[in-house]
Image: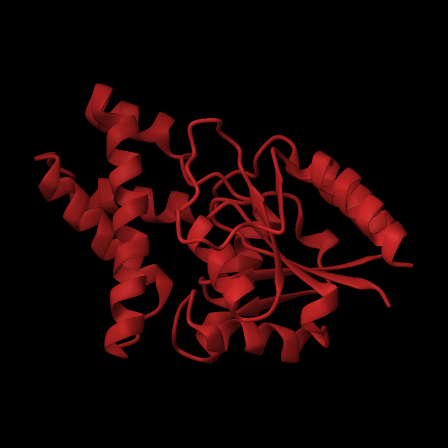
Length: 229
């Protein structure tokens, strides 16, 4: 049976710090910290909306997180600045290893899907812009359920839409909360640890596999798949 891979998009395939250069032109030396807070607040808003069952799509979470970050950093962004950054978020770049890794995985016995908090149309645009849409059989969005990761329902939704089973389906994510959510829902999960400074949450739930990038992911999964077949 072919192994199904669910690739998280933001922070795994796509570099959410891809706007640091644009931010430096707007706000100078605070750009890196600004980008970090923006991403953290974006995720926090999705978590809170999921818990409250007051769903708004990921794009709105991103926009409101940008407003918060500007206020928190005491940075004045014009309306044009705000719009430019949100437009930029729709065309973020892929990490350098992504295309090579996806190419190897696509050539193997794997079924590749993009699986995201973002709306399907936004994710399609993002993947096309990054030059990696061709590698995926489809895009599966939590927007269908109007909730967010790590709600257990979204992982079941992925399996249903992809036709995969928990035993033969892996979530691939750079986000520890996503990895823990998928394992808790019965999937296997890979943590893509792109930085040695990244820390996995000490919840007693470990990744099935940890890799530094997608080329290593291909090597590790191919070895595991060969043993299973």
